Length: 169
Image (cartoon, rainbow, N blue to C red; front, side, top):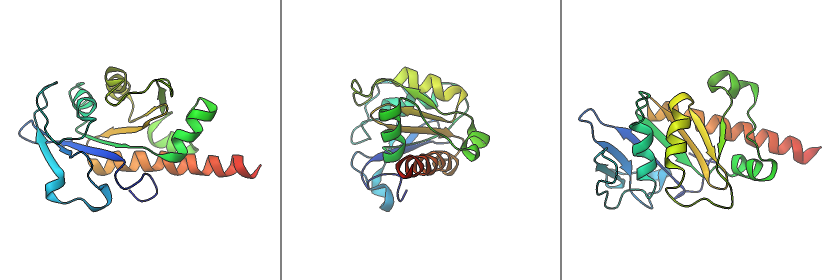
């Protein structure tokens, strides 16, 4: 996820064929994952999830929202978040819009708490593939981790371009 986030700033999950959820552990370095960085937990809300990412309840809510999406990638994308915080909107270029439509901006940058906005994020991702939580980060959901990663990084690349254009004006 080079350029999209700091090494320990984000998490990923994938629904397993047995109905469980594999999610990155808290503090995992996403650019250098090993098997020990993956934790298998129940998809049941509020079930114990020892050592799992602090965002596990949001991942569960997204996967459980009956949209058919089975993978989630979350990152604290600096350009997307900076633009959302300053301008109060999410910018997507034509390529992003043609890939996944307009991304949604949720929440208030001054009121985010870890695990917050769970229901709003899951609801937004039932009909969209990308949601941005003000002051926090981007959540992308799809059938596969690769597809979700592509959506997330496409939005961050678009945001970087918009940022550079605004800076150079």
